[in-house]
Length: 403
Image (spheres, rainbow, N blue to C red):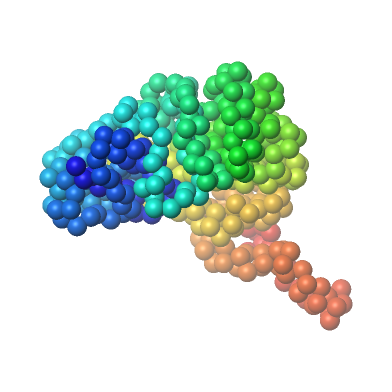
Protein backbone atom coordinates (compact mmCIF):
# COMPACT_ATOMS: atom_id res chain seq x y z
CA UNK A 1 0.00 0.00 0.00
CA UNK A 2 1.18 3.55 -0.78
CA UNK A 3 0.63 6.15 1.96
CA UNK A 4 1.14 9.92 1.68
CA UNK A 5 2.07 11.47 5.03
CA UNK A 6 0.99 15.12 5.01
CA UNK A 7 1.96 17.89 7.42
CA UNK A 8 -0.85 20.47 7.19
CA UNK A 9 1.03 23.27 9.02
CA UNK A 10 1.04 26.36 6.73
CA UNK A 11 4.60 27.14 7.82
CA UNK A 12 7.10 24.38 8.49
CA UNK A 13 8.76 25.45 11.74
CA UNK A 14 9.90 22.01 12.93
CA UNK A 15 10.15 18.56 11.39
CA UNK A 16 6.90 16.59 11.92
CA UNK A 17 8.12 13.91 14.31
CA UNK A 18 4.68 12.24 14.45
CA UNK A 19 4.75 11.61 10.70
CA UNK A 20 8.33 10.36 10.87
CA UNK A 21 7.20 7.80 13.45
CA UNK A 22 4.15 6.85 11.43
CA UNK A 23 6.38 6.35 8.40
CA UNK A 24 8.74 4.12 10.39
CA UNK A 25 5.81 2.00 11.58
CA UNK A 26 4.19 1.58 8.17
CA UNK A 27 7.46 0.99 6.33
CA UNK A 28 8.13 -1.73 8.86
CA UNK A 29 4.82 -3.25 7.79
CA UNK A 30 5.90 -3.21 4.15
CA UNK A 31 4.08 -0.06 3.00
CA UNK A 32 5.56 2.63 0.74
CA UNK A 33 5.47 6.07 2.42
CA UNK A 34 6.33 9.59 1.28
CA UNK A 35 6.33 12.85 3.25
CA UNK A 36 4.63 16.07 2.10
CA UNK A 37 4.75 19.53 3.71
CA UNK A 38 1.65 21.69 3.27
CA UNK A 39 0.89 20.09 -0.08
CA UNK A 40 -0.96 17.05 -1.37
CA UNK A 41 0.07 14.37 -3.87
CA UNK A 42 -1.62 14.15 -7.28
CA UNK A 43 -4.89 12.18 -7.44
CA UNK A 44 -4.64 8.40 -7.67
CA UNK A 45 -0.95 8.12 -6.83
CA UNK A 46 -1.43 7.02 -3.19
CA UNK A 47 -3.94 4.57 -1.74
CA UNK A 48 -4.29 6.54 1.49
CA UNK A 49 -3.50 10.05 2.70
CA UNK A 50 -2.70 10.55 6.39
CA UNK A 51 -2.71 14.13 7.62
CA UNK A 52 -1.45 15.57 10.89
CA UNK A 53 -2.90 18.76 12.36
CA UNK A 54 -1.44 21.28 14.78
CA UNK A 55 -2.85 24.53 16.22
CA UNK A 56 -6.57 25.28 16.38
CA UNK A 57 -6.12 28.62 14.60
CA UNK A 58 -4.84 26.68 11.58
CA UNK A 59 -7.93 24.47 11.45
CA UNK A 60 -9.56 26.16 8.43
CA UNK A 61 -6.39 25.50 6.46
CA UNK A 62 -6.23 21.88 7.67
CA UNK A 63 -9.90 21.30 6.87
CA UNK A 64 -9.37 22.64 3.37
CA UNK A 65 -6.56 20.14 2.84
CA UNK A 66 -8.73 17.32 4.23
CA UNK A 67 -11.53 18.12 1.78
CA UNK A 68 -9.12 18.18 -1.13
CA UNK A 69 -7.42 14.96 0.05
CA UNK A 70 -10.78 13.15 -0.18
CA UNK A 71 -10.67 13.77 -3.94
CA UNK A 72 -7.22 12.26 -4.27
CA UNK A 73 -7.25 8.97 -2.31
CA UNK A 74 -9.67 6.23 -1.33
CA UNK A 75 -9.05 6.75 2.38
CA UNK A 76 -8.13 9.86 4.39
CA UNK A 77 -6.98 9.57 8.00
CA UNK A 78 -6.48 12.60 10.25
CA UNK A 79 -4.70 12.93 13.61
CA UNK A 80 -2.62 15.37 15.62
CA UNK A 81 -3.41 18.16 18.04
CA UNK A 82 -6.46 19.82 16.47
CA UNK A 83 -7.97 16.52 15.41
CA UNK A 84 -7.56 15.18 18.96
CA UNK A 85 -9.07 18.28 20.56
CA UNK A 86 -11.92 18.65 18.03
CA UNK A 87 -12.50 15.17 16.55
CA UNK A 88 -16.14 15.85 15.63
CA UNK A 89 -15.15 18.77 13.42
CA UNK A 90 -13.00 16.48 11.29
CA UNK A 91 -15.37 13.49 11.51
CA UNK A 92 -18.09 15.69 10.02
CA UNK A 93 -15.97 15.77 6.85
CA UNK A 94 -16.45 12.04 6.42
CA UNK A 95 -12.86 11.01 7.15
CA UNK A 96 -11.29 8.72 9.75
CA UNK A 97 -9.96 10.49 12.84
CA UNK A 98 -7.48 9.25 15.43
CA UNK A 99 -7.45 10.86 18.88
CA UNK A 100 -4.24 10.99 20.92
CA UNK A 101 -1.08 8.94 20.44
CA UNK A 102 -0.91 5.83 18.28
CA UNK A 103 0.92 3.14 20.32
CA UNK A 104 2.28 1.32 17.27
CA UNK A 105 3.94 4.48 15.98
CA UNK A 106 4.99 5.71 19.42
CA UNK A 107 7.10 2.58 19.83
CA UNK A 108 9.10 3.42 16.68
CA UNK A 109 12.12 5.67 16.22
CA UNK A 110 11.55 8.48 13.68
CA UNK A 111 12.39 7.55 10.11
CA UNK A 112 14.51 10.57 9.20
CA UNK A 113 15.07 9.28 5.66
CA UNK A 114 11.57 10.59 4.88
CA UNK A 115 13.02 14.10 5.09
CA UNK A 116 15.23 13.42 2.09
CA UNK A 117 18.32 14.76 3.89
CA UNK A 118 20.17 14.38 7.17
CA UNK A 119 18.22 16.16 9.91
CA UNK A 120 19.51 19.40 11.42
CA UNK A 121 18.55 17.98 14.81
CA UNK A 122 17.17 14.76 16.24
CA UNK A 123 13.77 14.75 17.97
CA UNK A 124 12.73 12.63 20.92
CA UNK A 125 10.67 12.38 24.10
CA UNK A 126 11.97 10.83 27.31
CA UNK A 127 8.51 11.23 28.87
CA UNK A 128 4.93 11.75 27.85
CA UNK A 129 2.35 13.81 29.70
CA UNK A 130 2.87 16.15 32.65
CA UNK A 131 2.38 16.07 36.42
CA UNK A 132 0.72 19.52 36.26
CA UNK A 133 -2.88 20.13 35.25
CA UNK A 134 -2.64 23.77 34.24
CA UNK A 135 -5.99 25.08 33.03
CA UNK A 136 -4.42 26.98 30.16
CA UNK A 137 -2.57 23.94 28.80
CA UNK A 138 -3.76 21.18 26.46
CA UNK A 139 -1.24 18.52 27.53
CA UNK A 140 -3.55 16.98 30.14
CA UNK A 141 -6.15 16.48 27.41
CA UNK A 142 -3.77 15.08 24.82
CA UNK A 143 -1.49 13.03 27.10
CA UNK A 144 -3.35 12.59 30.41
CA UNK A 145 -0.83 10.22 32.01
CA UNK A 146 2.75 11.13 32.91
CA UNK A 147 5.00 8.24 31.93
CA UNK A 148 8.65 7.55 31.16
CA UNK A 149 9.68 6.46 27.72
CA UNK A 150 12.54 3.98 27.71
CA UNK A 151 15.31 3.71 25.10
CA UNK A 152 14.67 7.20 23.80
CA UNK A 153 18.29 7.35 22.62
CA UNK A 154 17.30 5.11 19.71
CA UNK A 155 15.58 8.18 18.21
CA UNK A 156 18.89 10.00 17.68
CA UNK A 157 20.17 10.24 14.11
CA UNK A 158 23.91 9.47 13.87
CA UNK A 159 24.63 12.55 11.74
CA UNK A 160 22.73 15.17 13.75
CA UNK A 161 24.61 17.51 16.05
CA UNK A 162 21.70 18.70 18.15
CA UNK A 163 18.87 17.03 20.03
CA UNK A 164 15.47 18.61 20.52
CA UNK A 165 13.53 17.09 23.42
CA UNK A 166 9.75 17.50 23.37
CA UNK A 167 9.14 16.46 26.99
CA UNK A 168 6.36 18.46 28.58
CA UNK A 169 7.94 18.33 32.05
CA UNK A 170 11.34 16.65 32.07
CA UNK A 171 12.22 17.81 35.60
CA UNK A 172 9.23 15.88 36.97
CA UNK A 173 11.45 12.80 36.76
CA UNK A 174 13.28 11.49 39.80
CA UNK A 175 16.90 12.46 40.42
CA UNK A 176 17.91 8.90 39.56
CA UNK A 177 16.13 9.04 36.20
CA UNK A 178 17.65 12.44 35.40
CA UNK A 179 21.13 11.11 36.17
CA UNK A 180 20.49 8.24 33.78
CA UNK A 181 19.43 10.66 31.04
CA UNK A 182 22.49 12.81 31.73
CA UNK A 183 24.76 9.77 31.35
CA UNK A 184 23.17 8.92 28.00
CA UNK A 185 23.45 12.51 26.77
CA UNK A 186 27.11 12.62 27.86
CA UNK A 187 27.80 9.53 25.74
CA UNK A 188 25.97 11.07 22.78
CA UNK A 189 28.09 14.21 23.14
CA UNK A 190 31.19 12.05 22.75
CA UNK A 191 29.71 10.89 19.45
CA UNK A 192 29.22 14.43 18.16
CA UNK A 193 26.16 16.01 19.81
CA UNK A 194 26.97 19.67 20.50
CA UNK A 195 23.85 20.87 22.30
CA UNK A 196 20.43 19.80 23.52
CA UNK A 197 17.21 21.79 23.76
CA UNK A 198 14.25 20.95 26.00
CA UNK A 199 11.96 22.80 23.65
CA UNK A 200 8.79 22.72 25.76
CA UNK A 201 10.57 24.27 28.73
CA UNK A 202 11.71 23.13 32.17
CA UNK A 203 9.62 23.54 35.32
CA UNK A 204 11.42 26.10 37.50
CA UNK A 205 9.47 24.91 40.56
CA UNK A 206 11.00 21.44 40.30
CA UNK A 207 14.66 22.43 40.03
CA UNK A 208 16.20 21.17 43.26
CA UNK A 209 19.92 21.29 44.05
CA UNK A 210 20.10 17.51 43.51
CA UNK A 211 18.52 17.77 40.08
CA UNK A 212 20.76 20.68 39.13
CA UNK A 213 23.83 18.64 40.07
CA UNK A 214 22.52 15.79 37.93
CA UNK A 215 22.06 17.87 34.78
CA UNK A 216 24.67 20.65 35.01
CA UNK A 217 27.10 18.75 32.73
CA UNK A 218 24.53 18.63 29.91
CA UNK A 219 25.06 21.22 27.12
CA UNK A 220 21.52 22.66 27.27
CA UNK A 221 21.25 25.62 24.90
CA UNK A 222 19.15 27.52 25.47
CA UNK A 223 17.76 26.68 28.90
CA UNK A 224 14.02 27.23 28.59
CA UNK A 225 11.84 28.08 31.58
CA UNK A 226 8.33 29.45 31.88
CA UNK A 227 7.14 32.37 33.98
CA UNK A 228 3.46 31.88 33.19
CA UNK A 229 1.92 33.37 36.31
CA UNK A 230 2.80 35.14 39.54
CA UNK A 231 2.74 31.85 41.47
CA UNK A 232 6.12 31.13 39.89
CA UNK A 233 7.59 34.41 41.15
CA UNK A 234 10.74 33.65 43.12
CA UNK A 235 10.97 30.10 41.77
CA UNK A 236 11.81 31.46 38.32
CA UNK A 237 14.46 33.92 39.47
CA UNK A 238 16.06 31.29 41.70
CA UNK A 239 16.17 28.69 38.91
CA UNK A 240 17.80 31.04 36.40
CA UNK A 241 20.31 32.36 38.94
CA UNK A 242 21.37 28.89 40.07
CA UNK A 243 21.70 27.57 36.53
CA UNK A 244 23.69 30.64 35.51
CA UNK A 245 25.97 30.05 38.50
CA UNK A 246 26.37 26.46 37.26
CA UNK A 247 27.70 27.74 33.94
CA UNK A 248 24.65 27.98 31.69
CA UNK A 249 24.73 31.20 29.68
CA UNK A 250 21.65 31.32 27.46
CA UNK A 251 18.02 31.28 28.63
CA UNK A 252 14.66 31.68 26.91
CA UNK A 253 11.61 32.30 29.07
CA UNK A 254 8.07 31.54 27.93
CA UNK A 255 5.76 34.23 29.36
CA UNK A 256 2.04 33.49 29.07
CA UNK A 257 -0.29 36.49 29.00
CA UNK A 258 -3.99 37.15 28.40
CA UNK A 259 -5.06 34.34 30.76
CA UNK A 260 -5.80 35.40 34.36
CA UNK A 261 -2.92 37.87 34.49
CA UNK A 262 -3.03 41.65 34.30
CA UNK A 263 -0.91 43.98 32.14
CA UNK A 264 0.97 44.85 35.34
CA UNK A 265 1.75 41.16 35.89
CA UNK A 266 3.10 40.87 32.36
CA UNK A 267 5.30 43.95 32.79
CA UNK A 268 6.74 42.53 36.02
CA UNK A 269 7.47 39.12 34.53
CA UNK A 270 9.09 40.53 31.38
CA UNK A 271 11.20 42.91 33.45
CA UNK A 272 12.35 39.98 35.62
CA UNK A 273 14.20 38.51 32.64
CA UNK A 274 15.91 41.83 31.91
CA UNK A 275 16.95 42.04 35.56
CA UNK A 276 18.36 38.53 35.47
CA UNK A 277 20.37 39.32 32.32
CA UNK A 278 21.90 42.25 34.15
CA UNK A 279 22.50 40.39 37.42
CA UNK A 280 23.91 37.12 36.09
CA UNK A 281 25.69 38.22 32.92
CA UNK A 282 23.81 35.52 31.03
CA UNK A 283 21.47 36.15 28.11
CA UNK A 284 17.93 35.82 29.47
CA UNK A 285 15.36 36.36 26.73
CA UNK A 286 11.58 36.61 27.09
CA UNK A 287 9.23 34.88 24.69
CA UNK A 288 5.68 36.21 25.30
CA UNK A 289 2.92 33.74 24.42
CA UNK A 290 -0.63 34.99 24.03
CA UNK A 291 -3.31 32.76 25.55
CA UNK A 292 -6.36 31.62 23.61
CA UNK A 293 -8.85 29.01 24.90
CA UNK A 294 -8.14 25.44 23.92
CA UNK A 295 -11.71 24.21 24.34
CA UNK A 296 -12.94 26.22 21.35
CA UNK A 297 -11.57 26.60 17.86
CA UNK A 298 -10.28 30.17 18.33
CA UNK A 299 -9.45 30.67 14.69
CA UNK A 300 -9.34 34.48 14.59
CA UNK A 301 -7.46 34.67 17.91
CA UNK A 302 -9.54 37.60 19.17
CA UNK A 303 -10.02 36.27 22.70
CA UNK A 304 -9.42 38.87 25.40
CA UNK A 305 -8.69 37.72 28.94
CA UNK A 306 -10.64 39.15 31.89
CA UNK A 307 -7.98 41.81 32.57
CA UNK A 308 -7.23 42.70 28.94
CA UNK A 309 -10.16 44.90 27.83
CA UNK A 310 -10.33 46.95 24.68
CA UNK A 311 -12.74 45.37 22.21
CA UNK A 312 -11.45 43.06 19.49
CA UNK A 313 -8.31 42.48 21.52
CA UNK A 314 -7.14 46.11 21.21
CA UNK A 315 -4.70 45.99 24.12
CA UNK A 316 -3.39 42.66 22.85
CA UNK A 317 -2.69 44.15 19.45
CA UNK A 318 -0.85 47.02 21.13
CA UNK A 319 1.36 44.78 23.28
CA UNK A 320 2.25 42.86 20.12
CA UNK A 321 3.26 46.14 18.51
CA UNK A 322 5.57 47.01 21.41
CA UNK A 323 7.12 43.53 21.37
CA UNK A 324 7.74 43.65 17.63
CA UNK A 325 9.19 47.15 17.65
CA UNK A 326 11.38 46.65 20.71
CA UNK A 327 13.04 43.45 19.56
CA UNK A 328 12.24 42.04 23.00
CA UNK A 329 14.32 38.92 22.50
CA UNK A 330 17.43 41.05 22.21
CA UNK A 331 17.01 43.37 25.20
CA UNK A 332 20.10 43.04 27.37
CA UNK A 333 19.32 45.06 30.51
CA UNK A 334 16.71 46.88 32.54
CA UNK A 335 17.44 50.25 30.92
CA UNK A 336 16.66 48.93 27.46
CA UNK A 337 13.53 47.19 28.76
CA UNK A 338 12.23 50.35 30.43
CA UNK A 339 12.92 52.36 27.28
CA UNK A 340 10.23 50.34 25.51
CA UNK A 341 7.94 49.09 28.27
CA UNK A 342 8.06 51.91 30.80
CA UNK A 343 9.72 52.38 34.16
CA UNK A 344 6.70 51.07 36.05
CA UNK A 345 3.67 48.88 35.54
CA UNK A 346 1.50 52.00 35.63
CA UNK A 347 3.54 53.61 32.85
CA UNK A 348 3.28 50.40 30.81
CA UNK A 349 -0.53 50.40 31.13
CA UNK A 350 -0.68 54.08 30.11
CA UNK A 351 1.53 53.24 27.16
CA UNK A 352 -0.89 50.52 26.02
CA UNK A 353 -3.69 53.11 25.98
CA UNK A 354 -1.67 55.90 24.37
CA UNK A 355 -3.66 57.10 21.30
CA UNK A 356 -0.57 57.62 19.13
CA UNK A 357 1.26 54.48 20.18
CA UNK A 358 2.22 53.45 16.63
CA UNK A 359 3.82 56.84 15.94
CA UNK A 360 5.60 56.74 19.29
CA UNK A 361 7.03 53.28 18.65
CA UNK A 362 8.33 54.28 15.21
CA UNK A 363 9.97 57.31 16.77
CA UNK A 364 11.50 55.26 19.56
CA UNK A 365 12.74 52.70 17.05
CA UNK A 366 14.64 55.39 15.18
CA UNK A 367 16.10 56.85 18.34
CA UNK A 368 17.00 53.45 19.78
CA UNK A 369 19.56 52.83 17.05
CA UNK A 370 21.80 55.37 18.76
CA UNK A 371 21.90 53.08 21.79
CA UNK A 372 23.13 50.13 19.74
CA UNK A 373 26.87 49.31 19.90
CA UNK A 374 27.18 49.24 16.10
CA UNK A 375 26.41 53.00 16.04
CA UNK A 376 29.14 53.81 18.56
CA UNK A 377 31.60 55.00 15.90
CA UNK A 378 28.93 57.33 14.47
CA UNK A 379 28.28 58.91 17.86
CA UNK A 380 32.00 59.28 18.46
CA UNK A 381 32.42 60.87 15.04
CA UNK A 382 29.74 63.45 15.80
CA UNK A 383 31.33 64.22 19.16
CA UNK A 384 34.70 64.75 17.50
CA UNK A 385 33.13 67.22 15.08
CA UNK A 386 30.86 69.10 17.45
CA UNK A 387 32.44 68.73 20.87
CA UNK A 388 30.55 67.82 24.00
CA UNK A 389 27.90 70.38 23.25
CA UNK A 390 27.09 68.80 19.87
CA UNK A 391 23.56 67.79 19.05
CA UNK A 392 23.20 64.03 19.22
CA UNK A 393 19.74 62.43 19.08
CA UNK A 394 18.80 61.08 22.50
CA UNK A 395 15.94 58.74 23.32
CA UNK A 396 12.80 59.96 25.05
CA UNK A 397 12.73 57.27 27.69
CA UNK A 398 9.28 57.91 29.13
CA UNK A 399 5.78 58.17 27.82
CA UNK A 400 5.39 61.58 29.39
CA UNK A 401 8.15 62.93 27.15
CA UNK A 402 6.34 62.06 23.91
CA UNK A 403 3.37 64.19 22.95
